[in-house]
Image (cartoon, rainbow, N blue to C red; front, side, top):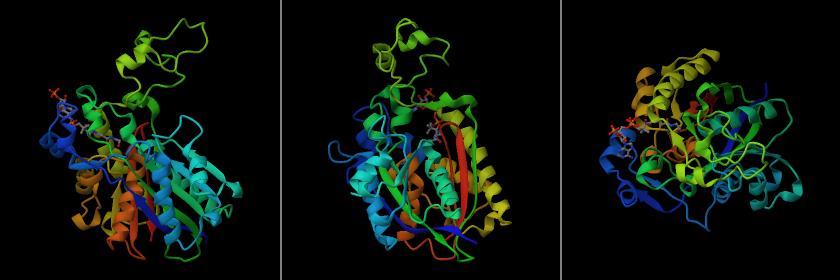
Length: 353
Ligand code: UT7
């Protein structure tokens, strides 16, 4: 039966290392707090005019394409997952196509907005295209340039200290090998508390979901236009990400193990049979909690948040790529990719490398 394999993988992170100490120049925070609550020591920030979400994704994609022994011209579909796109629209998929110089092939490009779960959602969508025979060489990219949109002040510190920039990419191809490829996946969401981890403006909500729409400074409801960015939005910081961290944490530590067990059950496997779990790098404490809940050994879980912070849609492909480069992912290994984040959305994929 045809399945989907990762034929090539690569990642790119900016050279610019930003330590916890560096953050203290902009906000009231300290290395001890950040390390104790998140495990993060440093992160990478892109350089303006030099790097964007798309250009970082392009660098990662070039490596993945080379390692898959293929060429950009052979790619027949693009999927790009990010919450920090270069433009509000069009999405990064077409920009990546342009950067790779393959616009002439006129292949489709799909943009995914599932935040931290973007890569798992993207992989599951790609898997259906490949299994159905529609495409044979899909380029899936997760990339984020968070630093352009974070609030570097004490008001935004609970969010700003967590996030970092980077990109990861995979080339997905069909395989007929019995012991290889994506084996199971599960995708979930619960939008009842969508604003708990959100960036509200610019957006078309017009204050609709809010008790006090005046906070957004919207003009007379009957006057069209002029509502994307108002003085009040800037003043109240609704153009920056907002997170109720403890609520996200509490839900994450329940849903991560739950969805991993769901995808394990689908293939009749147990946690002890996982060779490597790559959890979305949201917070080292969350990963450790998941590890304990599933009774996994240290060598069964890969974490690199200490170096990169939370890179949202990029975190799983960056970690998978690093683990592969370090020889921790080998042919035949049972790999679990799992994520939870804004939406809320969460999901997991089990694959045999
Ligand atoms: O990938 C997307 C999904 N996101 C997540 O999974 C994030 C989940 N949540 C978390 O990781 C944690 O909730 C955080 C790391 C964001 C925060 O840790 P916490 O232990 O939940 O802290 P808290 O928000 O409850 O804040 C505790 C205290 C507060 O001070 P008071 O009210 O106790 O005086 C905050 O104002 O820590 C303060 N604080 C900080 N202090 C120093 C918040 N941010 C900082 C900071 N530096 N950066």
